Image (cartoon, rainbow, N blue to C red):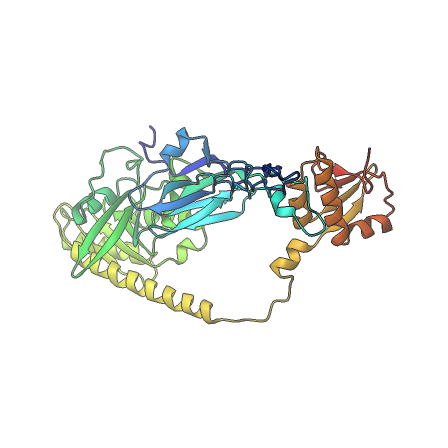
Length: 438
């Protein structure tokens, strides 16, 4: 059986817009023999931005959009006209979406409604030749190419955000509990892995509310991928408190409890330290003596500090007491988290000595390969990417930049000669020599 239309993981390619190329042109005016340069700059490429939207609750749309693409910037034009900036693309994702770069780097954790993060940055527009005019260079024939926009694949993962996560074996009564305490209308059926789609419900408790997530029933082996368990265990990670429901009609009520706890521990050691409330369900047909027996069986394996309740969702008994206990636990967790966050913000720690962002951008290195010299560095590679290697004026400008940055001197020290092949970065199209070639 499928996962209905709930999709909690997806992969998609994001492509920011390329920057527009700069333009080379000169003014042509009556009675003016040689007008000055008036080539305009290219426009910047558009960004791809993700925004968390509480009205979106699935990643299913991304299955049908293999690429999310922003618009490129337009080229500059004569008369100093700048190219139009490319239109950015804003993409709505559910609150609770995590975005990873294809190399595994975390790009965004969108936990608040309205939170925005630029995922892929558009390329900068190239300068037109009007930009390069100076007292010593009256007629520059140089214009830059626009930078490439960032393009890569991202992995999206949705983790439900809730105060309380319901855990327990299939048919432990989680869906029924949620439908009774909230406005949620989960589909309930009688088969081994009942809930196929996580459901969120809001329960009113005295003057407050609780957001409760019904996580699909766990089965033994869920953390290893059996059933649908490991795909949904991730949702429990974001809940403040767990409500562990145990069916009164289990053959071995203590074993049922410890099996689910073992699955939580196998998935994440941190999960078993999460505050928990335990409730024995479906007690409407049991006498007091049997209920006490079940309590004592469970108490033998449940930590002393964890409260055990008995409830009947069908008869609506014991429900309010459980909700009040949950709300108290949630408030305690949230307050402790707020204290920890404040401590983190106030902690200065030891001073960290490192390169500034400017120093990192300006740094470069030269290494000798068998057939060429390789120059690497953020700033010089950026200049190379903006250089039109078919335009000798542009290549000569790049040589000037290398000279001013001290790269040429280091190349000569490393043994480079006038006609040696110099490659900027790992792009073999960005190749030049120290001296101009005819």
